[in-house]
Length: 299
Image (spheres, rainbow, N blue to C red):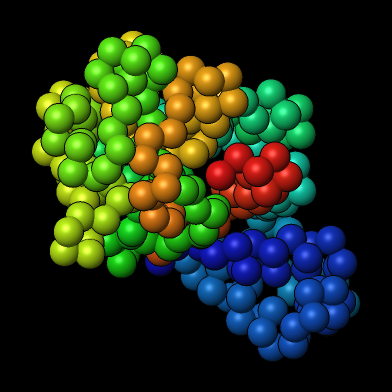
């Protein structure tokens, strides 16, 4: 049988206080409980650690040797507990975050400096994937998911939602003409997703009264790639507002079929596994991200 910390604490307390009764008071236990712990300890070690008399306790040679080891073990445990407590008070350690490229570039990256100033002991690792990853396989603490969640094994915290709209560059519209109806989109170059077909649903009605699902004439796996294609005048694109905000403000991209556009917002969640305790660094990042999203109206 292995020695327990309870037995070591009882042994050291008896030595330090000079009696089983005093040790029991110090550890808030019964004298019989302390006595049983010492008996178990000696039985496991198969040696006598001390001689007990009615007046005093005398350590054997083995007891003197074992006492030093016991103190070192308890000191190491206390140091580890103190270190963990400090990490709760001062969040520290590596934090692995996964998000698609547009969210990473347009939402997370601009906030990194402020986050590192507030939490200098957290080491961030940013990974980008434009498909849904397995958090355990990729050793990821937090993943940002845009759209409806499907995996019920994940915990999720809502960060907000983002409207989507149809956009094109002025150069493209000047060359190809501005569509005046949803039906006219059939005559245009449509930029869409190659892997996430759900993102090829556009926020305009088709004849049946449902959102239009397009067949892209030019595909890409990344929303950021589609943005760059639109900026390069390659067609009409569907983008979330957090991706296109600066382009719309500067006029590099302009709305298309604005009067036909219906409200369609994509929920944005931060997800992590249900069986994972929410460490302080994860909590800090999620609280910070939500705070800055609301403060700066990033979504």
